[in-house]
Structures are given as structure tokens and as C-alpha cells.
Image (tube, rainbow, N blue to C red; front, side, top):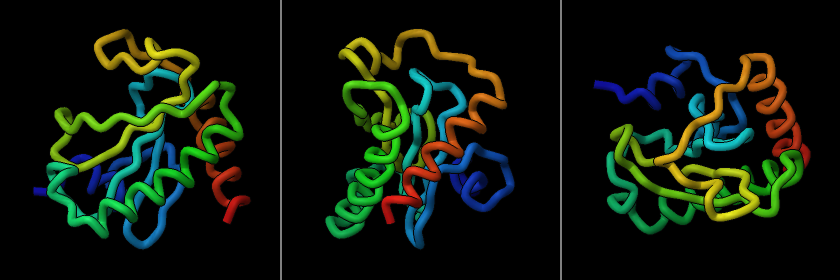
Length: 134
């Protein structure tokens, strides 16, 4: 059965799209810790990120790096933090979260509830920054 992320990648579930290449897909988290919180996933379903082969791991991180640079250009933050939890969805993924301090990346804390129009604007800005860097 396809994971939630595969359904998003295949267009069966809408998302706030950021970027994609042949092997990866990036979109805004709908329960963000911060505005601009983005998920980066391999298109190939793999439950546990450490089950990816070394080449796939390197490619995933290279793609995430490009997305993180785009987030850094458009979101006010000191850094873009990265986290790999892998508990909520059985599909490997990286969280990229704009942060100003360590507590900004606390997954046990409260989540934001931005309006759809704001999410669209944020996704478009990050997408444009990503595209302009290519």
C-alpha cells in the first residue's frame, strides 16, 4: 500500500510543493514547527532512512541541501535545522526547519496553524529561490 508521501508525490493528495528531481520531492509540512518547515523525501518508498544505500543517502542529502539553501534565502532565521525522526510516516524523510534557537526544533512542542494562502505564498517563495539557484 502506498504511503501518505507517495500519494502526495503522485498527486493523489495535494501539497504545498517546493521542488523535485527524478528521485526526490520536497513540500511544506502541514503541521509546521516554523513557517517554511519542509519535508524532503525520496520518491522510492523506503521506511527507514538508514536502509537507503550510501549513494541514495548522499543524493537525498544533496537535494535537501539545495532546498535548505532556498529556505535560508527566503525565511527569516539564523539556520535551517535538519531532523530525521521517521516515526510518523513509514517513508524516509528529512525535516528542514527554519530555526533561531534549539527550542525551535522541538517536535514535542506545539505546531503552527498557518492559513492556506500563507502556506501557498511560502511554498512559492521557497520554490522560486530553489529554481533560481539551479
